[in-house]
Amino acid sequence: MSRSQFVRIDSAELDELAKSAGVPLPLEQSGAWDPFDEAVAGRRPWGRFAWILDGDPVAVISLSALEGRGFTYLWAKHGPVWFTAPTPTMERQFREGLAAIVREADRSLAFIRLHAEPADDLVDLLQSVTYDRTVVLDLTPSDEERMNAMKKRGRRDVRKALRDETMVAAEETASASAVFGELYELLVETGARDEFGIAPRQTYELMLSALGPQHGRLFTVRRGGRPLCWGICTVNGAHASYYYAASNEEGRKSGAPDLLVWSMAKFLKESGVQVFDLMGIDSDRAPQLAGVRGFKTKFSEEITEIPGAWDYPLRPLFYRGLVAGLKAKRRLIEKLRSRSR
Image 1 (cartoon, rainbow, N blue to C red):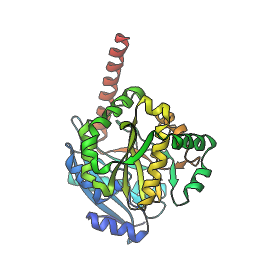
Image 2 (spheres, one colour):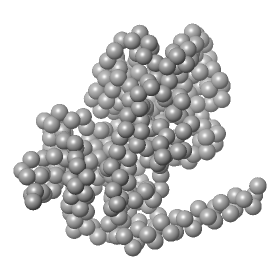
Image 3 (cartoon, rainbow, N blue to C red):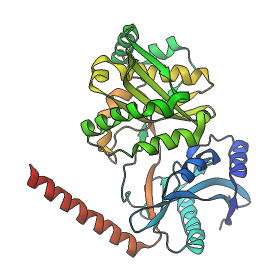
């Protein structure tokens, strides 16, 4: 039988282990994410661990504690980070060992949310939407090579947007605090149009200020000074992710989002980014994301499968109560909505 143990480590040690293994570290699993966790009410960094199997580190994980309504859970966003391709047995052994450590430290925690392949000890997320398919852009080829590799429709739409000299793409990270008020109005419009919830304005502003310009960047497309669309990208070394975006109706009709993604890729490449993750398209687990697949696959037809997020209950009976309570709440909301139609 293999021998395993969890060793508590700090962020510098986690970074060094990943670097030694030659594995890219997602921003949310690095110490650079801590200032954001510390800035937002109801969340905090909780702990980092290396998993040692038969004497060798094979995975690391960084956990944040988040407070729900009446419960607290741990969230390892884009973690654990594996140094070798794990087998289902390894993944289960990892979860069981981690759960033992967590329960010993705090028995009040309801569950751990982490990324893994499907297994019978994991359940769908209590709240929120995960994704297990995404579009990842390789920024190392030239602009011409990347353009030629796009779908015909994608090339047409980007070239049309580039010809429209009334639209100007720019990075506005340095002035984010001054401009985000007007940009947030586009997010309110986007949320209402596409029927998804948005966080308070302060959350996005805190994200940019806490991560700093090295790790959080803001890009816009404007016409005559008016914002048509914007995007927030997170960056960690050579890897960037398209985290949040919004557009108004004028921007959508003008092709501003096409210009935004193309321009963001260029700006990011100029600063050393080689991989740009557009973060999520639809699958059986995430049918809600069907609307963005056509847009994101304009830039690359290659779809990347990744482990989705799951909940690992630490207190099964309590967790089942949370699920039942949430279902009852959703039924009530739907009933009230039907009355108002």
